[in-house]
Amino acid sequence: MRSLKVAMLQILPAGTLEENLQKGLEYCKKAKTLGADIAVFPEMWSTGYCISEDGEILKKSAIARDSEFVQAFGRAAKRFDMAVGITFLESFEPFPRNTICLFDRFGKLALTYAKVHTCDFGDERRLCPGEDFYVCDLDTIKGTVKVGAMICYDREFPESARILMLKGAEIVLVPNACPMEINRISQLRGRAYENMMGIATVNYPTGQPDCNGHSTAFDGIAYRPSEHGSRDTLLIEAGEREGIYLADFPMDEMRAYRSREVHGNAYRRPEKYHLLIAEEKQEPFIREDFRS
Image 1 (cartoon, rainbow, N blue to C red):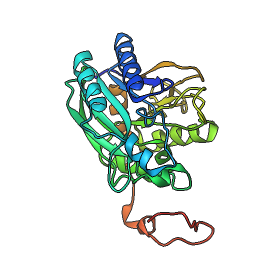
Image 2: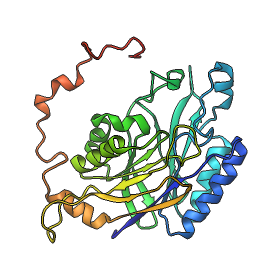
Image 3: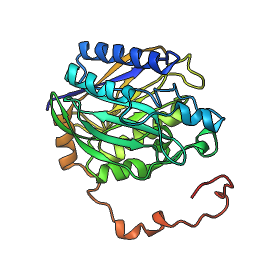
Image 4: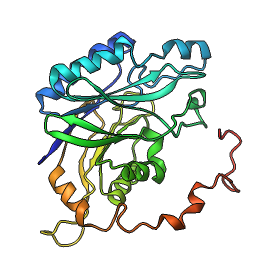
């Protein structure tokens, strides 16, 4: 697999669920014409990242994994011979979840991931967090690639990407809905570098509240034998405007790099890391709104 092209759909929501469905399908078609192997939406596309304060309205705006909205993107994946990662507010008990479903090029559901690190200090305190991080063998037109997912705030915890790396992820898809500035982009650059994996983050463009575009993709390759010193792992950084931004991941080179370099799981000493899974919290990190 010389390369894998991921289309980051940095687009504005259209309003209603049906309008978001139609616009989403239209942009999947456009992504295919650009040569995409995978198309990915920004966070919670079904509602345009709208989380109602009214519990009843919130539940009514959530949809099931087998809903027409989600399944339509599965059929689109099969029709376009292109994997599709669709994001939505998922029906769940006792509260909805922030979820991505990834369909392979045959329209088969390959991965379902619900956001683990919900923003409990904000609107997401009304959502259920996910239970784990997952990696799938995704069938694309270029071949099989191991793909995982994080969602927005997940990227701020090194553990999220590390677990995905340990489970074999080569590419991590990151739907997003927040301002992407130097520090958040640096987090993603770091996650790609330290785990030797590709990361594609898809944000909403300017025009969506509290968002500014700047979707990014990193290939994780810090050193090339043919080049002196280190290199920036950035493949592409979008501007603020709506559009489709294509990241071309050099998969053969990424796999060769992983087989020889020193990061990832090559020299870790997990027997020394017991404190990382300790549940006790101490000042200054005590927060009354933390949900265990």
